[in-house]
Image 1 (cartoon, rainbow, N blue to C red):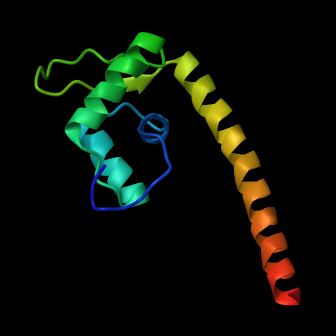
Image 2 (spheres, rainbow, N blue to C red):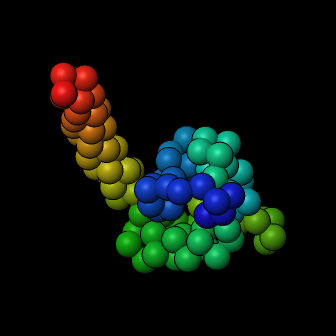
Length: 110
């Protein structure tokens, strides 16, 4: 990822989210990630992650007549992995927000 933006989000998660609605080819995935996050994913990052996700069985290439574009779709295993990550993120967000509120309350008293 570029743009000088510090981020903590794993590219794999962003790709899973991009593919959750419909199959997309590489450039379309990069556009989706940038539209959602403001981060520009580099092609090497994207295709490296896609290769790992394919080996894990989370995505599959969709066969089309257009040899220039290779769309990818989530598999059932990919949807389960995305759901697992999102559930974990929900917990992390709730705990993080609670701790920020607690820290803010503690600071005001001091």
